[in-house]
Image (cartoon, rainbow, N blue to C red; front, side, top):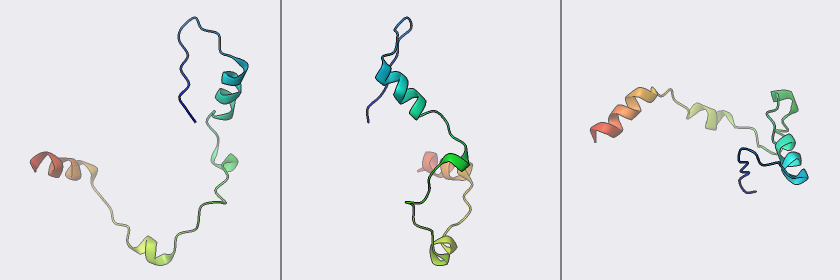
Length: 62
């Protein structure tokens, strides 16, 4: 799937209109998550809290 570029004054084609409608924001209830495997308790236990600001500071300091 490529990018969709519309410039001011351009009329979108039928295909572009269809793609815009297809990719419109959806509510969580409309999104199909069935193809994503559930995480195990072991995987979830490896998560840790991260302070993004601290992580950014570490990158700058290195």
